[in-house]
Image 1: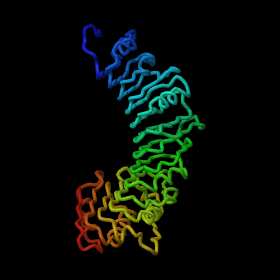
Image 2 (image 1 turned 120 degrees about the vertical axis):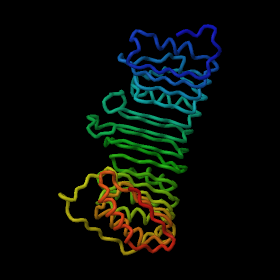
Image 3 (image 1 turned 135 degrees about the vertical axis):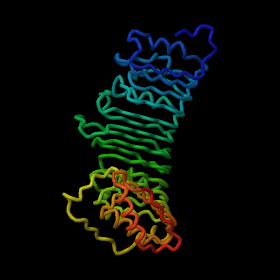
Image 4 (image 1 turned 90 degrees about the vertical axis):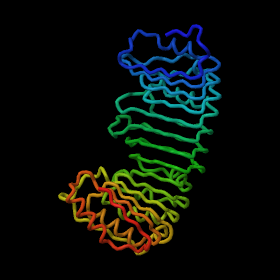
Length: 359
């Protein structure tokens, strides 16, 4: 690759796969492309050799606004690093030189608004304590270990982003998670194996949208917050044991207008599970009696817990305008029709309700 007599490069995307010769001087290519006009660099390296070190000039490119580093890249941040214009940074399955490399990188991005991080299960990226301390950050997506077999029990995630408005965390490990208060947070997608810390629950009190995947078959820890501004809520991986805690959660969401429940991937335990028992609360959550307008359930398989939840919502949601029920794809047509007939016979307190069933 040669850049002789070429105009100044503003955007550069380099994507190399397993066929790339392992003796290629890729770092040199990047070094030649870095000039005063470079705005965006996307570098994806999936070759069969080890991680490469990016040129030091990359970390002092004052015009760079978007930087994407993916796969076989060693993030070795020099002492002198300055990325004053960078507002979007993607660190996808990379390896870090040491525990402090990512900290130095993030601390040198005063204008950073969007951060996307992926850490693989099968790769040791040399970081135990992953720290995100960026005062300017608005959006954070952190996809950590998917499974809990990580031997590094001392691992942790630290988030200190006071201006954050969007948070997406998926982490199947049970590593500790320390989160400073985020008073501006509006949208959160949470799927973590560890229990929520108090600061996270406090920050969630200001959100308008929450997507929650409860761990361990319980939502009890998440019921310790009052979601006073929440209008849309999605519960993923719904479990029969969640019905009671779901109603408690709804009691803490006085302005909820849209409730979505996804039980698509739940294994049917009816043969080896105790009969479903649900002690319904004596009082109805305020959101059901005065605000809830849309209810959606995805992956309906006709289980008793699903029936009771739907019946409870229909009987108590006075403002409900629409209920969408999608059948589980594993059910045959005959069973789907039987389930639809059963659902259609359920009474509803709302006089303007429209029920839609999707086979």
